[in-house]
Length: 136
Image (tube, rainbow, N blue to C red; front, side, top):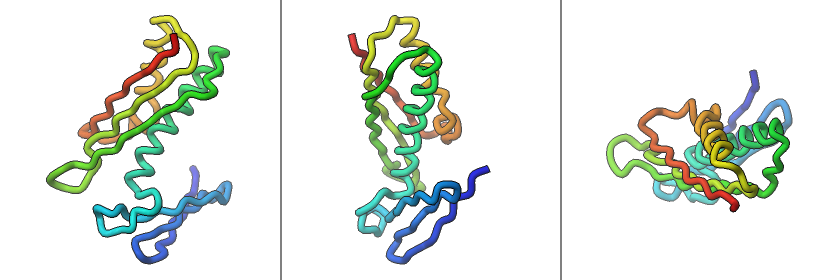
């Protein structure tokens, strides 16, 4: 178990503290939902969590294979639902793998990315397309 505490600071801003390390993240509501949009929003953090989770599990897999993925980049584009309840509709990812891999290894890397814990925890109504860019 990991404890995280959140304090509401007013003006639609919060501070989340990671109890084991003391690290903290400031959040703010986005401009399109009454906030200033000058910090990560809670839904931005979910998008960032997905991308960092994928990077982490791919790093673990690469370590097991003795590959160096330093420099791997992942961009995520969050899209909110246009109607109905306010929710994330899509988290589209572009993943740049900095090493050449065989077709077989590419398939394994894609499977690992699709089974990271954050991805597996998302509601199935959230579209999560992943585009991989492979070094030749």
